[in-house]
Amino acid sequence: MGQHYIPKYYLEGFTEFPTSSNIWVYEKGSNRIFKTAIKTIANENNRWPKSVEEYLANQIEAPAKPVLDRIRSRQPISQSDKDTLSAYMVIMLQRVPKGLERTKAKAPEVLDQIFNGLESEITRLIVEHPSKKNVLQKRLQELPGLKLKYEGDFPIEVWYQNLKPDALPQVRAVLPAMTWIFLTSEKRQPFLTNDNPFFFFEGLGIGKPESEITFPISSTITLWATWHKNVLEGYIAATDNIIREINRRTASAATKYAYYSEEAQWVVNLINKKNLRLNRLT
Image (tube, rainbow, N blue to C red):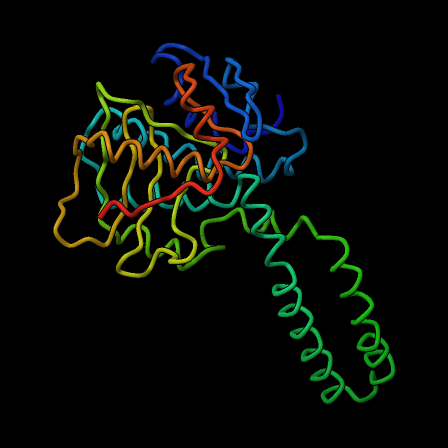
């Protein structure tokens, strides 16, 4: 069924009912809705090498599974659990289709850094090894053409290297330090998720006092990470307005698909609505 860019165990939190393997899928930009098994969605053939797949499964997903279980059963979590789930969320930010787009958008900046470093290194070697000057100068002259080649052909290996928590050191360091509140929706509208579930206001980032993050954990729980000083960590019943706001965020951030536990026309309308007005929760 290909390699899942959204882990199957994550999607199990949004199935039709707890013992089901089926989930409702909503395609953005159309009226297409279908119910399918989670093993058939959010995956692509040959998305990354086997070594990357094994790393994600063993080093990222496996440690996060018991943390997700504790949250889904409303248990307290430790600082260590926050660290583990933070690594999971950083990877989620990177492994999804939107994450690949972000990496490609940053490629020119990354290439500049790489080739500037190469130029400096070769220049240093010319000074230190004058007998190799002719060979090294030839390499130096080849750099502009080589850079032009990479600019036209994105090296996918750059993205593979970004599929590690430390690839985004600021996010990795800051996220566990935020105040984590788990908003619950027991008898109200369930929470959506999507193919890009880590939401933050990109104009703010996550390190400013007004920054906040939402990350759906299941149909009935969403993480709200904030710098707000007047709230305590734990599980809080969300109001209808907050649930609707979180679902608007999730719909707006979807790249192509939203996932839900029910068939509902309002999801179709929401995911296809342009220029959704989004508000902070505080």
